[in-house]
Image (cartoon, rainbow, N blue to C red; front, top):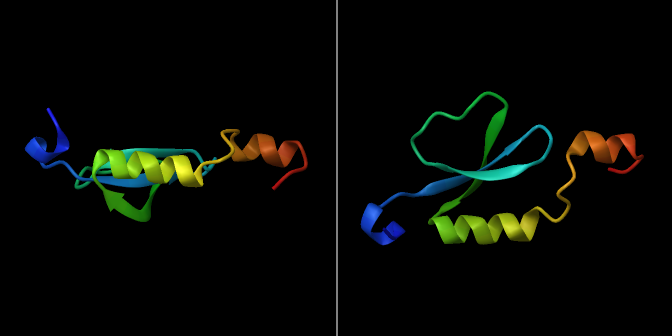
Length: 68
């Protein structure tokens, strides 16, 4: 089923380790996850995540390696 037929909209979310995911709007977020300002259809959100999540390493690993 496509998003046009389901009508599901998503929010881009991230956690404290700066890892991203998408989450159906209106559903409560799991502990440790926060909404970003981006929302839309599934493909739009996935494209946004591809654009902003350029380093897949968790934040704690980057910090331990002396990086931002």
